[in-house]
Structure formats: C-alpha cells, structure tokens
Length: 143
Image (cartoon, rainbow, N blue to C red; front, side):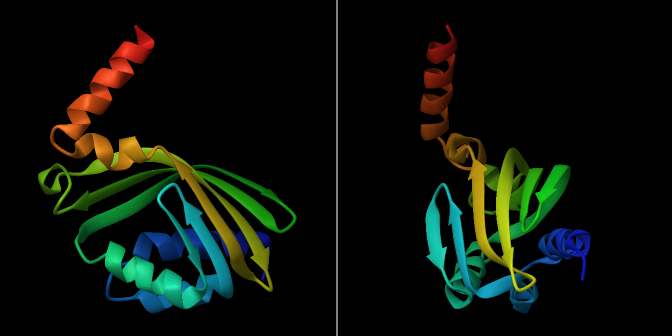
C-alpha cells in the first residue's frame, strides 16, 4: 500500500466516522498509538476508541475539509477545517475551526497523531459568558 493510499484511507475514515462505526479506528491506528491534541493525551488504541466513543456521544455531525497535505517518508502533515455540530455547543448549530494534524506511520498504521488547533475557536468561545470574555480579550490584544 502506498503512502498516498494511507492518507486517502485516513481522510475517508475520518469523514465516515460516527458513534456506530468506531471499529474503523483499528484500520488506521496502530495498537500502540499516541494521540495528542490541545485538550488530551491518549495512549493506545483501546483508550483512543473509548475517547472517540465519548466524543461522538453528543456529536450530531462532523466532517473535515482538507486544505493541504504534506508528506515526507513516514510522516504526514494535514491542514484542515473541521465542521461539526454538537448538542451542547452553540445550540447545536454548525461550528468550524482550522487546525492541522501531524502523523507518523509504523507498519502501515498511524503510531503517533498530534493535532494542533485553537481550543477557543473550537469550544470555549461558543460557551455563553466565556465566549464573550474570550472575544473581549482578543479585541484588547489587537487594539
């Protein structure tokens, strides 16, 4: 399987993923995967599957739009926009934010996955009161 095929499989899986088909994670991730984002560090496929199970509990919809893919040897950097709706965020209306993922492959599967994104764009600024405070801080920082 080519590196391009790995990337295509990864992107296809993420755009199909929902609470009913979390078994797809095992097709992409190594048993010993380390997954890091601004809010979590998760070690191992079973812990990652549990994390996604909790994540998708209230997720109404989610999809990724790829902006750019950079690849070298067994590493890939993906630049994306995520669109999602969650019953507890912004009254279930769609939210979008930009981010990127750094992936390392071993034995044809992702062994290391690190996401970079602004947690305020994803979550915090959509929470009543807290969102207003974040926007105020942003305005003052650029004034």
